[in-house]
Length: 183
Image 1: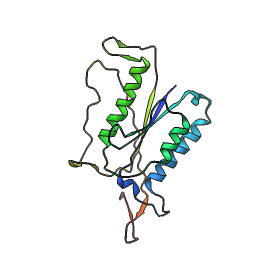
Image 2: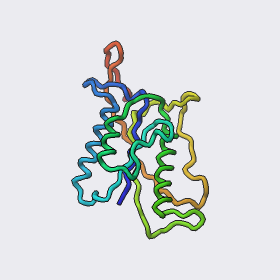
Image 3: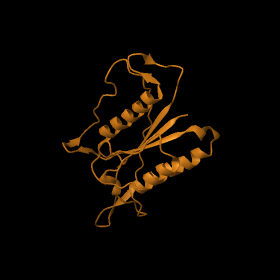
Image 4: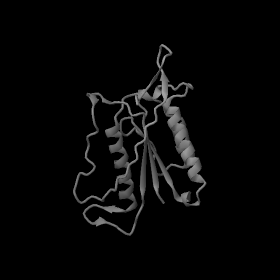
């Protein structure tokens, strides 16, 4: 019964439009909808739980937690709006904190008593972003800086990642086409 947490970039840069007139946020929403549609065809997905987290300030970043049903998740996904800053580090921290809270409530983790190794619940964090510069109220950051672990005996996380970047042509205000990523 895995948990799939979708972390969607809702910064203002996601309002950029492609040549087809679709915003990056609309593309991200469509990707999540397609993923869920394809996943629902698999009989092993019956116990899946979905969470939706955005780049907003905590606690407003949590749009759908582990107790919400599929309809609530889809409704929150469709209502996402792009505004604000690109705060990837804070959004990742909120996502891992939410997953950790779920593990505490479900009894997987017991602080001071160790971990229950016989009770496994895989968590998959899927981040969708345009990959623009990381911005915060303090300015532009060059990299994400935060600590996954506050204490050394906390449950282990195996982090595997896949990073793909799609370069879509976008239009600026003068209706000239330029590319986000030069080859």
